[in-house]
Length: 351
Ligand code: NAD
Ligand code: LMR
Image 1 (cartoon, protein in one colour):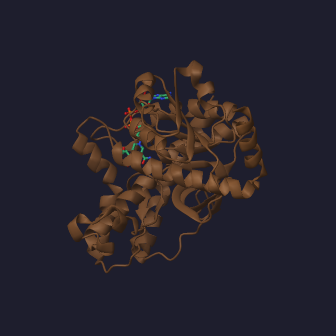
Image 2 (cartoon, protein in one colour; image 1 turned 30 degrees about the vertical axis):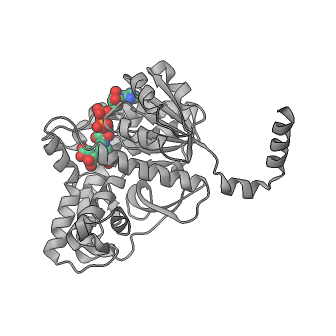
Image 3 (cartoon, protein in one colour; image 1 turned 90 degrees about the vertical axis):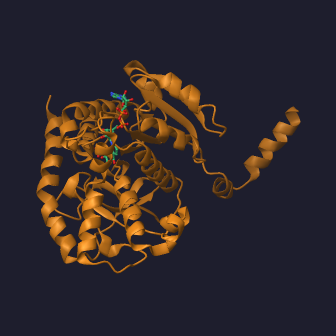
């Protein structure tokens, strides 16, 4: 038995490293902070299903053991370990390649995302302080709202700790892209989306970049760049833009006090996390929209297409050609996005 193992390990070590790693990508440790929540639970399940994840660390201030017991029975190779309470946060984070943060309170009808600031700003600040200490090189995906402020808060925390690398910090805006794609495909019937409601593949073929930020008019879908191309009237583009901007509110109202988007957000968060892991593994040309440090506008943070790589953001891509309507949208969103960014920076620098 021992000799079989010996031979096996010899034959593995004789395989050229590059060839071996292209067959079996390195297993990654992913941490979900807020794992027992409405987003955290289905997102953790989707990460358990991701073949790029070998270790899944689930942390929450309450309710983690039940989620871990449940998800750990799913038959994939990913090892699931749960942590509960602040005293265990360091252990949860150690060795992380990617940390996803859906911790914090969701909206109720009548609230804006900024109304969540008072509670969620402190939660994100505390969690990022621990990230700086225990896994300073991890990629960080911030889902907690208001994203337009929580991402700047995270950057200031990391700067203070001396660990900030702008390539590793992301605000997750994938749900805006998911919505824009769904509404565009549904309206235009491009990519066979009209046949029996469309197949998963036909919707996958559709793409719509969404830029700016993640709240109301700061969410700016660029339907002029949507693919496959379709002829839409000005009125139709205005209606699709408004529906994308109000997508979160549509769900908040439908849930009538029971929270905001969780299932579609888990789907979107899993897509973005998978893209980050692909980038880490050296897969070329992984491009997604995300709210990142940016110099493509006058604002220090902005959502646009970014190319992902082994260090996180490889390149922040420009806006490309935009229509007059989108130009107006860009002008209109700047003041609100600027003030949300400044609010986050100010909060993080208060003692
Ligand atoms: P939820 O209340 O169902 O879950 C939040 C979880 O966070 C809870 O389990 C709670 O115990 C946990 N938590 C609270 N404080 C914590 C801390 N200090 N450390 C670790 N965990 C902590 O809420 P939800 O529906 O999952 O939404 C979570 C956040 O995501 C909200 O802020 C919401 O607005 C935001 N959100 C963002 C997007 C986006 O597109 N970026 C989409 C949907 C929701
Ligand atoms: C969303 O877009 O669904 C989230 O930001 C949650 C919300 O409050 O709308």
